Amino acid sequence: PMALGNLADLEEIAPTKDRPACDEILDEALSVDRTTYSNHHVYPYTYVAGYRYRKKDFKGAMKAWAQAASVVKRYKYSKEDEEIYKEFMEINNDLIPHILKTEEDLLTDPQCYLDLLQFYDGLCSWEEDSATPVLHEGWVKPMVKSFMSFGFSTRSQLGLTIQSEEDTKDGEKKQKKLNLTLHSVKMAALRDILQAERMNASALHLQLTAQTQTEPKKQRTSIEQDGRAKR
Image (cartoon, rainbow, N blue to C red; front, side):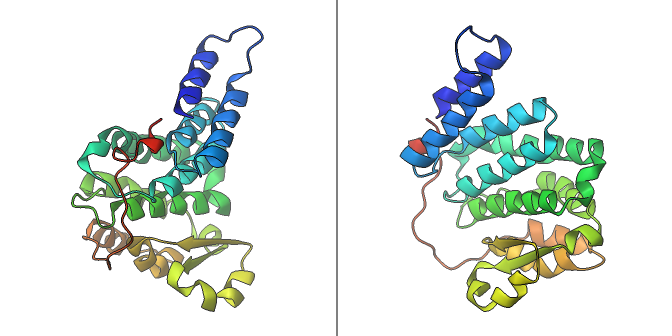
């Protein structure tokens, strides 16, 4: 899948006659990842997101980043994961803030808010059980600003469920058109704040920078240790 992503980038820059277009190659990369590798590759989604971002399909880019983070939560972060760490940091610090500033219509789109939360839930899950935290001060300020950009009228259209409560929240989930299940300890702890009419920026900041204490989970490797995510 990663080789197909590289090929798609090259085809976007310099299309080859009689070769599939960039977006078709990216679709093939996603298909191979899902059918052959059980959706264990992160980079096909970041390639898709980058392509959509360059095409100014910002909603599509947000969705693809959320999907990338849903894959990375399968892994445990380590210092060896510096390459993808830097890519996610650029998305958090620069690209998402630019999108929310440029495309103000997205701030009234509950699906965009869902994708934002799914992105951060994946990153927080990646951080859990890791010896090295992911979300330091440099990450959290842009995160809080992005959360605060969405008004209550948009946020209230999204139902948030914690993974451990899924079976007891069926009635609540049916009342919302959109629902997201939170898997990470940090995001689960933020649920009430994220759903409040007035979000508390200080409380968001404190919770996001806190060290996560979790019960031992099934063994997870880093992305570098599991080469499937890189190739």
